[in-house]
Image 1: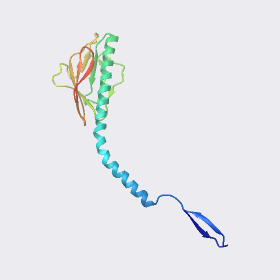
Image 2 (image 1 turned 60 degrees about the horizontal axis):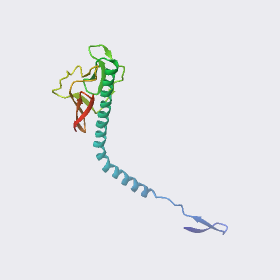
Image 3 (image 1 turned 30 degrees about the vertical axis):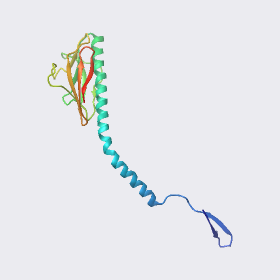
Image 4 (image 1 turned 90 degrees about the vertical axis):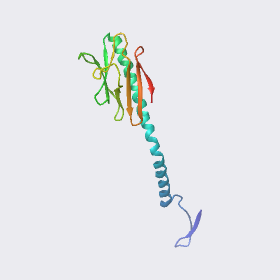
Length: 165
């Protein structure tokens, strides 16, 4: 839309209106966006925790397979040992023979690993993979705010099998 203005010399000048949004319109849109985010955000929390638990389980399974492979290739026992708080998992050689040159697995700030009650394996040693690729039947509990994932080590295949969420 245009309006006609007359200058001081009497010549007509056409002037266009500026198109845009008012400050009030922008504030209303911002309030609507913040309200929508406040409604949606709480539902994303449990999904993020579940994703961390899933990621921890996948990384732990990869480390278990790596430990079994190292034991077979090096023809010696390899132990997978969780730290006291359950955040870190390390590979070591049993009997104080040293640490395997594999970086420890960090499960993150909220995910913890512990051996299940009733496992045949001692808390100190962890899971021992033998040179022939076998290990004891061990139950593991991977926990976070999203819940507990029960896993069992398949002794013959050296893989973790999920026993429930």
